[in-house]
Length: 279
Ligand code: KIV
Image (cartoon, rainbow, N blue to C red; front, top):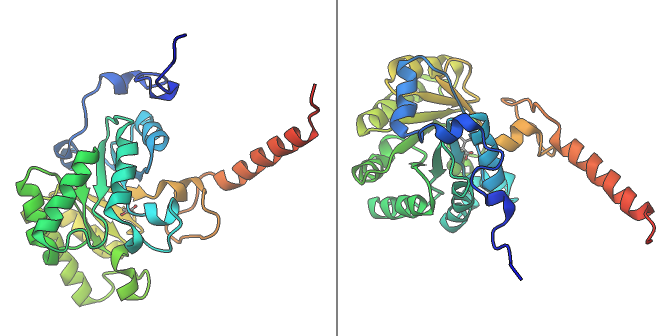
């Protein structure tokens, strides 16, 4: 008797967009070059195989296995709970989709406190399938950023509100409202460019300062809750899809009510099963 050992979904080309099959892998350099051509960048998060594959089939060029994983998949209250082992597990799942998109992954809290830790952690995420890593911070993590880049791993910056520091900061607060924060953002952004980051997330930055940083930097800014003037936008995909109805965010209006649709479908199926008769 022959046994099928491969789950049908992992057949390489089933349902895949033809143009994506032939197109080349998107590199960090290609993301960076989009700014030069004035192309807006639509980035999203994914944490597993099907979501990565779906986003890739739509042509999203930059997919992030974010440590938002902690809240939107693992049920933690915040991102500092996420471990490197958890990130690796989800990066592996996302990477099995073999996306054409650049697959970036977050270095989780406390995994890049020293240069040695940062490099070892980044290498583990790359071994799991990430094409690039992201870490939160500017000048204070520059030695770590340089070590990562010196070892050939593309680096994605993250400035503004830093969710890994939400506990120290006592909440999610918009950055850039006062002059010291404004100046700090400019200095951190310049430092990341100087080190060689290919792009930088601006999270919860005032639109005025996000626009200024965007005009100043030669690399793309990818905003989340930072107004319309960034070079690109990123969202946590379950927030875009309305998959988590238990909280709402100012910066994202769900475009689908996925939670409600799931409840309806599951309810209908449950009732159908309960009403069915054994033949
Ligand atoms: O963890 C994450 O999903 C992120 C995005 C919000 C940029 O860092």
